[in-house]
Length: 217
Image (cartoon, rainbow, N blue to C red; front, side):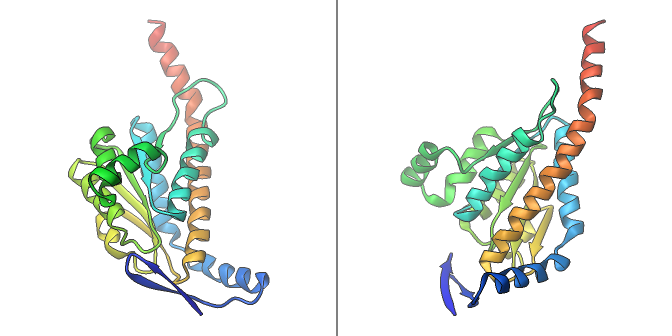
């Protein structure tokens, strides 16, 4: 059994001898997923769209890749085919010059919080992604977002770490295997994209019609 270090916390990596065994273990997590919490997060994202709010998503390492992937799916995959209002999702993981500037001149802990101070408006959504829930920059990002009047949501693993109490809604993957937590995070984010896209596309004709009515007055 190998071990890796995640913010001074040891993650034990169970030995898996075949791809079939890996997927069998992964499949065992699916019935235990917190579907009610995932649906609640979808509701927060839908409300953000309805109110014209922005969504800021962030994380580290594999979770940073998940944040960027979610941003792409939400901005493009949930876009209506015709003209209409779209989701506004920004991944705070993507501006490498800005991230390295804050990390170099201040500290790595500040890289998300400082970006939020530039962009966040009250009522916007801060969406954290972290396997441990204890990443210092993610925790500080959530604290900053809360202080600025944002709605805070997140997905994590294990018991949710420090970020659990900082989220209005937090969906926890019940596993101690970081690889499987990340797998389930991807699946949860895809399910959110599907749910939100259905709402956006259903609402788009109504929004276009309402805008046309206002312009015609």
